[in-house]
Image (cartoon, rainbow, N blue to C red):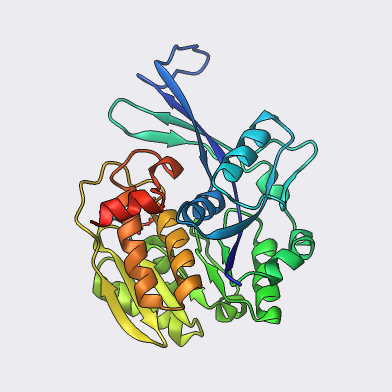
Amino acid sequence: MNRIAVIGSNMVDLITYVDRMPEAGETLEAPRFSLGCGGKGANQAVAAAKLGADVVFVTRVGDDFFADGTIANLQACGIDTRHVRKVPGASSGVAPIFVRPDSGNSILIIKGANAAMDAIAIKDAADALKQSSLIVLQLEIAIEVVYAAIDFAAEHGIPVLLNPAPAVAGLDPARLAKLDFLAPNETELALLSGMPVTSLETAQAAARSLVDNGCTHIIATLGEKGALYVGCEGEWHIPACRVNAVDTTGAGDAFVGCFAKVWSETHDIRTAMEEAVAYSACSVTAFGTQSSYPDSAAFERFRD
Ligand code: ATP
């Protein structure tokens, strides 16, 4: 059994390239528009699936025309979409993004159907979850769904990884203690530990404090500093690969998706982190989020 269950969000990115933002009451023509598939849950599911993992994704879409496009995109990546359900009367999750000529951007997030997923979704997907070798979670859905999934995983002895993104304060310490893997970025690590994270050393200290409070394995991503492990297997740091980074959006999700795939096959944390550092580095060399994630053939070429 080697199946990854991702429970989380999906979003449609509505990317408008603007010369400038319109004033209140003004209608303005913009030069270019593109649609993209995103959402942290979907990104992580897609990264793992592109690498050849068997992935089931538990999420909610609206009953609008974005829903079928989202499902088609997931299926094209080979993801099991039996637990992607449409929520009557809800919009799909969308992110209108405005990109200015200097590459600066303004982003709105409308969670839509993602916010409508409740803890019943976990019971509903119980059979699929029980057949999984790893459950992967993030925080773009209601916290009670995340907690229900952690409790379910603990009850059934299924390893569980939480990518605590976006950063949220006040997570239940009892639930954090039930996790096998906690995978924060620097901002999330600082928020969860209550300690500043500005360097490798401060990241190590913050991660140690989380281990002292019951987390088994902390896998912290540190942007261009790479990734850090602190946990019951010791401590190590894997420097980032040197690449020409053009767009780092979704690098954290690429890391998590690749880590999940490799760990669920090998149960070797260091190897999974090394692969994830390389995979996320490859993703930052291309524009876009899911579109920047290489499949296994492209990833092999990158590694050569
Ligand atoms: P995002 O929110 O954009 O998904 P994140 O903040 O969750 O990103 P980061 O810690 O910035 O995640 O990056 C994840 C991983 O991507 C890092 O651990 C690193 O291995 C890789 N990475 C990020 N930026 C670079 C870079 N400039 N060069 C090489 N690798 C990078």
